[in-house]
Image (tube, rainbow, N blue to C red; front, side):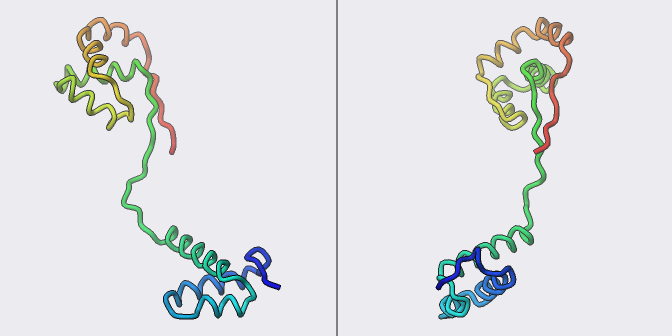
Length: 138
């Protein structure tokens, strides 16, 4: 009777996985392990793949910096658009290109133009609204 990966003891699973991984590419290793432990070759391949995934996850260095997500409300986006337009100053089109980078959202050029065309009125309204953003852990 052939065993499955779930019926093998953990020590046998480790031995199969490591042997298959170390001797990868050598002719007959998979078949020999399958015969020795009474399992199908697919079980050996699966255990080898799981071991490879675990080793890769443990030792692979990620080049990506840690990421955090910032949740912002519409008044915060209006403040940012006005600040970029007045303080930077950048074009409305540039603000539209910066929003996906800074906030992960897109605004149409028309919406940005509408906000920026009345900065005094928006600024007075936005001054009354507290900052609504918060940092969300990834």
